[in-house]
Image (tube, rainbow, N blue to C red):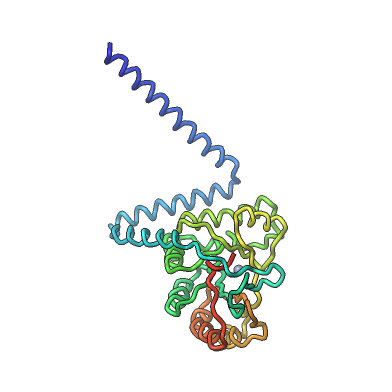
Length: 291
Ligand SMILES: [Zn+2]
């Protein structure tokens, strides 16, 4: 008699478990069903890449202890990241303005179109110089486990990972739904890698729309364009030329928001740019202190 009721209880439990699992997988399918063909393809693609990566890690028998230690340190850093906000981005000039009595003679370093080939080296150089920066990343460039590792390493070195959209398209050419995808997808990717969603957004070509501003606000991101940059122009594509103009630009003023890219000449000039700005009395802004 007793055994029978225990058996009945067990059956009920198994049945309920089954229902719960069904519900979960149904809602997941619904979400996928709404997604366009292209998204589904790229989702599958990244799913495959993830699998590949897991297999690779298993095959290599990576030293897991070291990995765990690293990620523990990373999350500790994330917890202690609540820093007092001393600056805000001026939405008319894109300068970094002091909120109260913060030092106004400040310059913000930003590196766009990362991670290409030089972002990690740039981060290591900046770390060595003990200054901070924002790396604005594009989702389409985070296309391999190695690139994911680069993002994680840059983040663990203490840099902000900003959102520069998935495909680097002009948002003005896209539908609202496409704009949303371009923005939110990158936040999802970065959160998956670092555990933290980007706090800063920069539209490709500085081309914001009313709708993209709304999405950025919903995602709790601060929007910023920049005040000056030169490294995409032919005449500044050497270490010496870019180092000189970034420090001696007529646009260098309090709160300058410096646009640079993941490019070789900019990487090579990075140290001279930082020390040049400091020699002129500028402090390099810590993105953590920007609202
Ligand atoms: Zn860009």
